[in-house]
Length: 67
Image (cartoon, rainbow, N blue to C red; front, side, top):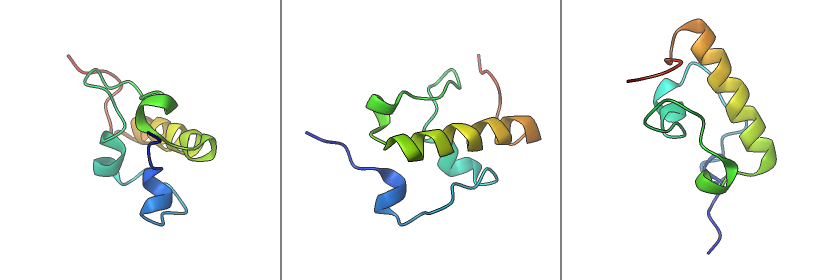
């Protein structure tokens, strides 16, 4: 069964780093970025997601690690 790309399904063209609630869906409990095969994103969406999460971490919207 193929997973559906979340961002294409919700018609989101630009993944905003300020939308921390959406980005949290794609983090593991230890605040790592989920693999593409786990979350079902396309390669383009996965690259944009990784960049948005890294920017959100730098700006302080998301943590680097959780314990």
